[in-house]
Length: 227
Length: 316
Image (cartoon, rainbow over all chains, first blue to last red; front, side, top):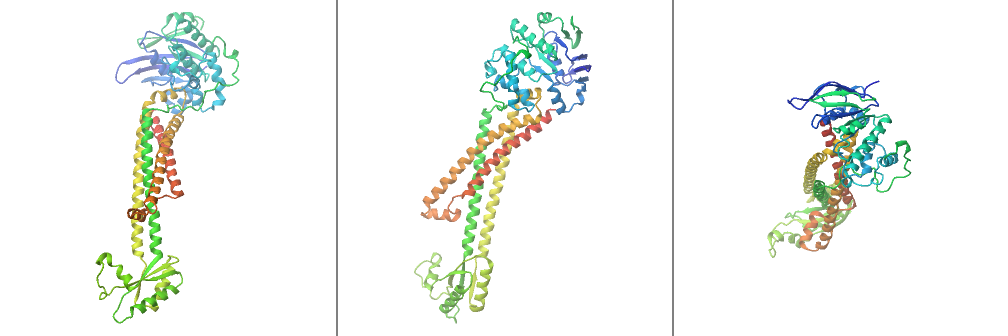
């Protein structure tokens, strides 16, 4: 089975500074579930950005969906990004759009007509508990609602790979567990999930998950109890 | 939220207030409003230049048509000639020539009165060989009728000279063409300045919308999709600016036309009317001004699209 993402001796440095991550060797398999963890500032977000190819490694090879990222043309990269859902730590919702329009954005970017995706978006918003907040601006949403809207935007294209950066960082423990169950449900439906978090308590509740622990610029891998 | 995707019933219809076509680039911003004002001013100036060029061109055509419609026969008073007889003969020959609509011989006193602006009134000009003038109104201003008249006069009245004002009319035409060319150059300058303003505004909007561009890229939008969004945004701004500019230009020319009609009987008004005609554009003139506005609107959209595409390609 071809890995969705494969890192081979990947290193990254900014300018002439030291390598912030180095000798990364791991892969993300289809339908897998993993936490990306480590102390704050260890490089979790950098690693997620490398996975999303918004950062390019200064050495090594990243293969994404079987293709060498260094050889991708821009249009190919766009196509591949449509197979990845990304939940940003700071949500990155567009404040001048409604919740519905934010969640529909990836489908609109694909060139689909609004009539063709309206019911899908409404259904998903109800699923994440934002059925009554569809017409609201992100400016008036609570932290948890923004988080769920960001997750819904990442899920709307039914991605093969979901990357989430601290998706429970802005919500109370109860909502964090509910959001995690959302990711588990998505994983059950066939999506590979990578969740960056430093919440050990939360990870312990999902002991089956694989853990990628970032520290000192390297990644150590611990397979989950039931992985 | 506890339900699974398969358990959620599909929505029958979407609630109101949703739109799939809401602009992804925020419509209102200080920079956007400033650009609308700049486009409005530039469009107004472009319309003013185009309108002035059309007025001068039309007035020049009217002048030349008028000038070429009338030709003058000059009869010089030689000592041995009976001038009155030569004038009468020339008038008869002219009136019998095909293509001539009317003949108006000037009497001796009328001819002398033509010199009053230069020599003053009350002088005895009987000793001066003042040429006699016959004004001939042509039915047509083409060269055939004039050639016929010239041949007839050369054959029957050799003492008469025909002045068809063509050299003067040609100079007038050159002057009008120069004014039109100058207006075209000014129009080009206005368009270049407008294009530069749009370029600055587009890059400013891109810088201000960096976050939006980044998010669109992350959700799988192509450069062409993003550029199209910017194009739509700037076409809207361009349309608003152009609409204001063209409306003000319409108001300007309609007011100028009304004022010129009002002043038509005053000495100053006559001079202005002689220069610019009635100072009013015809229907096609207003269509041309609207076309300038439409062109500005489209130019704004396409130019911003091209700039955005170019800049996005550099982002690779």
